[in-house]
Length: 251
Length: 222
Image 1 (cartoon, helix red, strand yellow):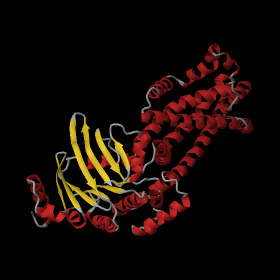
Image 2 (tube, chains in turn green, purple; image 1 turned 180 degrees about the vertical axis):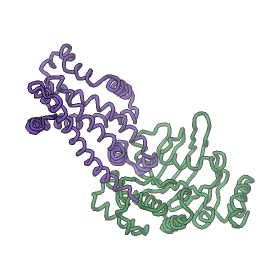
Image 3 (cartoon, rainbow over the protein chains, first blue to last red; image 1 turned 60 degrees about the horizontal axis):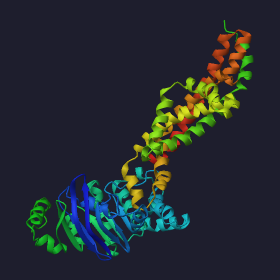
Image 4 (tube, chains in turn orange, brown; image 1 turned 90 degrees about the vertical axis):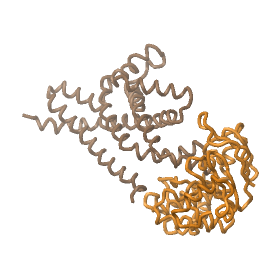
């Protein structure tokens, strides 16, 4: 239901990545890992055209967009099928927690305000922040802000939620609550693509782990396979380096 | 030394011209705000052609004295455009103040817009908002808060700048003082009194400004 075909992104003359193909089924959870600067985040941002790919085709739930011919309307359609969770939360500073979640429903989906607020309250309940409904982002902890960020993505009713290093700017004490909310979403069969460095989380939650290096998908496999028996030497090297300090078993 | 009795008697006379002064400033401020927002958005989004015109406009109105601009509108333009012959002093003053201050205000609004962190823009786009929705609902409300102290300062400047309208023959607060002083010859008393009136008005506004800022900052208290 989600397909990337030959997606290519250049900055200037430099290829960030070229001819990336990736397919997800409904309800599938993919975790993308790899060294910094290999284009993981850029790839994620290309899926909803926060970065415009230079070429390639992206299909999400029936909406197909060709990068070279994408009109503004195409891009808006695609964005309504996707939702995005940012490393730095990106909460609207002038809106309360409730309004952050209901904003898209009111403005984009044109749901009547009362109905949108009722649904936002349900979401606040699910993310465990019902008591914070009228708090502004500045008054919330990093973990709470990111849970609101996830709540906003849930409100979009998207076919896929894209997570760009959702725990990377959090103080360690808040990481757990955000990961457990994501696990909760996973158990509800929410389709997700997650870029993260949380390897234990990838093991627990991913249906498939994709290893990217230097703008290429090097290999992809279910986590038990990729973490224990990676085929490519680059994957092996990366995993040894990143797993060694955590005490997790090395491949 | 000071003729206090004269000053006391002059006070209600001068105060009766204060409404005109405040009206000119308020109307010019409202027009200037709208126009400055448009200029700022054009500058931020770099609309082709319009951006160039906005730059030229801002450069001219910041680069020449307000008094020159007022004379240009009141005495100069009617020679070029027939329809402007009947332009009255108040209209010319409001027009001049609007254009002059919108050039300054556009730059502070632009700075406020640019200062809002990019992640909110991306977040709004990611949930499918259009550029105008993003501007109206997320960026401008926050930019307003950031720009408010500066804009209030411009408003205060504007109130004082209305005094230049007396050079276009408008009998506003300053014009009235000038007339009174030249018939009584008590220049010190008259101009001291008008200075105090401007001062009190500005102080009252500054107090209002502080209240407004506290209100606008309510979303940002930890």
